[in-house]
Each structure stands twice: as C-alpha cells, then as structure tokens.
Image (tube, rainbow over all chains, first blue to last red; front, side, top):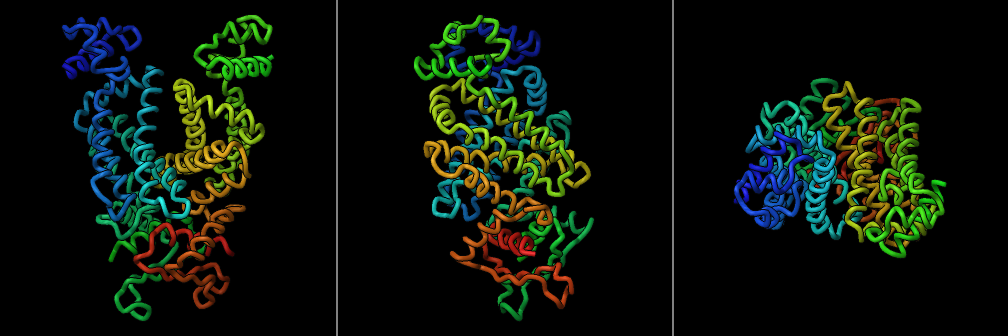
Length: 247
Length: 247
C-alpha cells in the first residue's frame, strides 16, 4: 500500500507537477481512501522521498552496532547507505532529482533530511569523542565534511543521469575526508586516500617519505617525513596518511 | 521603516508566538500599511532574520575583493562576518535563538540561509580551485567544514546566553579547519591552529618535530617529522601544521 501510494504520487508529480497534484489525486490514482495516505506519509513531500526514514533507521542501527576502532570510517560507512539507496533505483533517483530541482519546497525538504543524516553522524562522533579535546567541535566538522563529500559524489552521479559507478564515486569522495580526519589504525582506513596520494604524487611531489626507520624503532612503527614548508598542507597530510596506512 | 517593522515583528513574536502573529498585527504595531511589510520582507520568516541578506552581500563582496593567497583563510574570514553580525546584538540574537528553537518553520528557514552561506563559500573555493584535482569536491568539503565549525561556536555562544568572547570562540573553531585544510603560506594562516597543537602536545605528544633541518635545506624551508604510526592522524596533522607555520 505504501509503495503503491508513493508510486502513484510520483507518477502524478511527473505528469502534472508537484504543486498541482493534490493528495486527493494521489489516493484516487492509487485506489485507496484519503486517510490511507496520511497513515503512511505526513505530507506530500514525504511521498517523494519514501525511503529516507528507513535509511536513517539503518544508519542509526549500523552506528549502534559497536565501537568501531575508526569512528570516521564508521560514519563514512554509514553515509554510504544513502548512496546505496539512491543507486538501487537509478531511474527513479534521476527523475526525482530533476523534480527536486524544480520545486523549492522539495529542496527545503531535502535540506531538512540532509540535516538529519548529518545530525545522526555528528551524534555518533560526539559520543565517541566525548572525552577528546574539542570532541563536539570535531564531531560537527567531520560529520559536515562527510555529508558534503557524499553529496558531491551523489550530485555528480545524479547529474550524469545515473551513469557510472556510484559506489566508486562516493568512495573516492569519502577518501578525501578520511585521509584528513580518519584514524590510520582503523580497519580498511586509508585505502581510498592512498589512491588520492598516488595521484598527487604523480603530479607534483613536494615532499619525500620513508616508512619505518629501523634506527628509530626496530618494529617499524615510526614514519619519518621530510616536507617543504611551501607544500600545501593537504598534500602533506595525504602523504602522511598514506605512509601511516602502508604498514 | 524596515528596522521598525523588524522590531515590531520581533516583539510580537516574543509576546504572542510566531505562528499566532499575523502580518496585519505587525503592520498595525509598526503603524504602517500592509504593503509596506512585503516591500521589505518576502515573508514573516524573513522579518525574524532581517540582516542575513546584507551579510550575504558583505560576504560576497569580501570574497570578490581579491585573490587571497590562502583561499581557506579567506572563507574563514568570510564566515566570521556571520558571527560578528550575531555578536553585534547579543540580547536580540539570544532571544531569537530561543524563538527559533520553538518554531519548526524558523529552523527550516535558518537551514536555507545556512545553505546559502555555504554555497557562497563553496562557489568561491570552486573558482579558486578550478584547476586543482578534485577542486570541486574539496571546495564543497571545506565550505561545509567551515560552516560547521562556525556554527558550533555560534551555537555554544548563543546557548551560553551570549556570554564570553564570540570572536575568540569562532577563531578557535575555525582554527581546527584551517589547521587541516588551510595553506600554511597564507597570511596569518595557522595561528589559531598553532594554539590547538600546543594543547595537544601538552597533553600527550605521540611524535617529535624538528623545524628547518640545515642538512636538507640551508634556508630552513623544510620540516622533518618523526611520528608513531599509532598516533591519531589529526594530532600528527596539527603538529605538521604548527611546524610549517612556525617559520
């Protein structure tokens, strides 16, 4: 019933426009009563995005599952759920993107949803970093960075008409955040960032790196880095991250 | 006239609540005609935030002023304009914060405004990094991080009832972003971040740093860093930043 309503609503929005479609039109098309609509959707806007509530619940469940040693990696994994939801139905996602661009009310609705995802990620990081200096500040900043990276990849994919590998695009984007903010000891941490660094190094390497100096630490748990003071910090950071990840 | 309308509106919102105040109430209190209200404010919501349009224009003008060698520093300076606007009138800002917490429509309005600030900062960074690899992605991520850091400081200040040094709080918050994403050669870059690093080092220093190694570079433009692979990346980054800034 819920799916039938969402489908009827979406078809009507595409045919007549969002503003000119009423809830009565939707229930007539779906062949159900008016109260059924409001049982499933608080508003017309909600029917355009029928899967965000479930995705938010999945995200919360994923984050509550355990104390991932790499909290930034955990929020990146949580953000990937959103891309996966969009990528599961490319045609619908791309059509909806077009609709959202045309209807200011839907853009506002989407902003609120994005804010809820961001709040979920930030809340998790705040708990994980409750005792860290500036933990709350870092939580807000990292959550915003993760959401911005994810949305950059998502928008590119939507604008391309849903072509290309959505998961790879979001991995690449999240790698940029993870390379800067992630914990290098986390499981799987640093892989996408290492790719980035490779690219940066091929282009112009303003620094040199040596892994595990045996004079300093016989177990090779130390990295020594020589960097030009003129190098952009983000490049140095990416290389440090790559060196730390390449254990 | 515009100020009188905003003032009348705000007093009524505090007295009767936002939803129960009509535009007719506002114009009656201000002693003007109904059309005057809509000449200045597209909606009731806009009257609650009468200064954002001017602040957005100031931000755009500041960013258009020139090619700051440190684009991240430039967007941090631009973000400071928002805090300055709030701090110019603490009592009003704190009362409005309370009102916004109670009225969902005002929170949604505020989200849209924040999105416009973020878009302004991201647009500037996109232009500056048009030729950089992943320039658009980095622009979105850094703009989001700057806005999140700014808003973290702003919210803390508002929740404290407008006590304390708003500018210092926002400098501290932006220092975290700048320490990670800023260009170390930019004018004034790294100062707030250096403060951070000091704090991190006092607590627990998982690495050692030496500035300007004369064996490697006679002009001291090189830094050499030895870091434990187990150190959290963000601490290493803060130290690299401090070393690079301490020229």
